[in-house]
Image 1 (cartoon, helix red, strand yellow):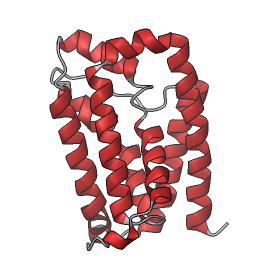
Image 2 (cartoon, helix red, strand yellow):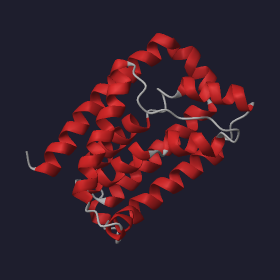
Image 3 (cartoon, helix red, strand yellow):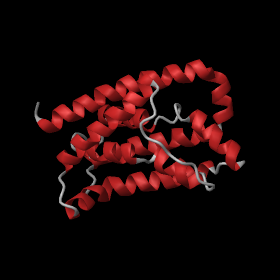
Image 4 (cartoon, one colour):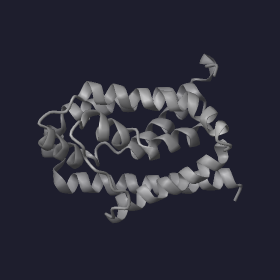
Length: 193
């Protein structure tokens, strides 16, 4: 896929960055990260961030080809993705647990980099974003988010003290509502409704 440097667009970069920020929800995951750190004793922030970035960039460029191999189009995947995003948003807003994850011993890669940071919702969102935005703008959005993820992973304890439990809960619910709106927009844009 060719990158056209003339199509760098600040509005698209901001939109993709905010969408990915909401779906990755690293601030909402701070309690999970703290629990993983407690169980493992240490989290390799650099490794987790690099693996998550690699997975997202790989899927951004090869995801569409992979879908063609299994006979799906991007619009169908985007519609399916809108449902995944909708359910993730419902979890965030209502405090439900729909998706259950188990935490194995090697936490920096699994489950931290995948699926917590670069999970099904993130991958689905990347392909959905490709139906609306230029690839290079999505790439910048990925990189900005990974920098933020790295910062959060390095400073989890400080951020927990700064926001407090109620502050993190408010952030999680606010981004949940944003995700609900994103899910509805993706569904409408790819169904023509």
